[in-house]
Image (cartoon, rainbow, N blue to C red; front, side):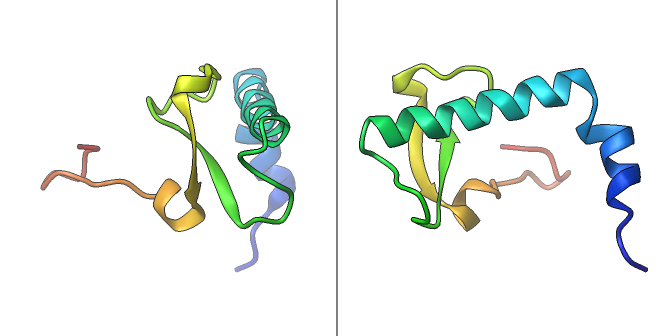
Length: 81
């Protein structure tokens, strides 16, 4: 069954809170590019160390590979460690 992107946007990605979080993640990426720590097409993600996408302080940002940044250790009950 193919994904319904219109429905996904309507139900989740289009909500004001998610729009603000996405804008903040994009701003973090731009900040890292200006600082020379990232570049377009490098295949890396900007990682928020405290997992808060709205916290774009320099000490909270880092560069990680996509697989590393998009996964995290879990406990036995599938919670984040």
